[in-house]
Length: 88
Image (cartoon, rainbow, N blue to C red; front, side, top):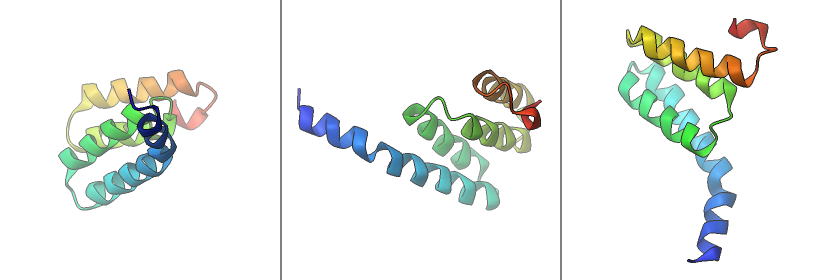
């Protein structure tokens, strides 16, 4: 196991996370909702505790007509940040 490679991957994760979320926002604005969904899922793989990303995923899924998946994503955001009144 290459510990250096693993360390570099972990250190680059915040940059990669930000890039993926930015890509998702661009895809959402362009109406490319499947690509936005995929980018957000990849971002959440890097940081599953990002409540704001779960909310963004819920918005993308709602816009794509995937109501049940949108609700599930929003529920996850609420679990992560129950004090955020704007999520309720």
